[in-house]
Image (cartoon, rainbow, N blue to C red; front, top):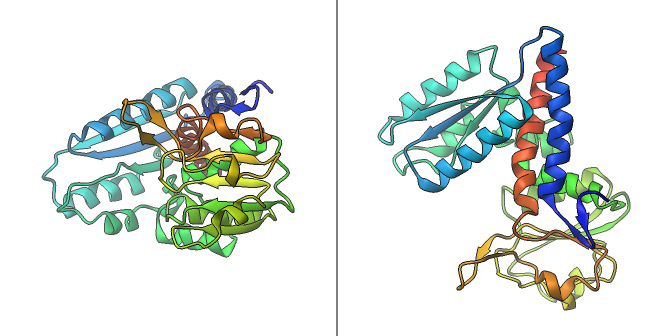
Length: 287
């Protein structure tokens, strides 16, 4: 497989492949005299990590040909001021997706701001209505990291239908929604967390193991079923400054069918999934 090196599946390579496909699609729209898809990003303040994320998303949009408009707001903006910008994006027919960059300054109510985003432009999949639709099994915009994980599993050639899947971690942004997406694909899913007893016994039964626990290199070969597909969502910084995931990749490598590395694993696919959702929103509007 072109996105793999041995048993390592690189999300960075998969995302490049998918972005090439989206670029061809956008070029087709332009050639037919249609407007191109547009993502509006709202950034409040100058948090260094947020600025870095915004640059990465803007670069990805440029590669694909998606227009990216960044609304850079002052750190002391009022709740009403922020929500006025969101409502203006809601009402702009040229805007297909709205991304509210987190975290927000402490004086702002992030949940209320998210609630203001038009559900049809919620390409981050965070509004209550999209969350409700996800769990009701109705069409929706799924959160980007879980959506990227499903794309990774498909690229691994993992047979999701009928598989036993275990998700270690129950966060609102990753653990719970990825479990829901796996159920929608007819996997039998178990969600584990810090209070789970006999964790190793459960994970060793998994055909698909998603590690999103936030503990550096916790998952070694004693947690893994032979031939399993393993997706490492963790991003941790070691004492030497290097990044590592929740999976001890070198230790599990001889036992798995395939595993994602950290870095260059799930992270690039999160941004790619944001573009995929923006493209889907565009198609729904333009037809």
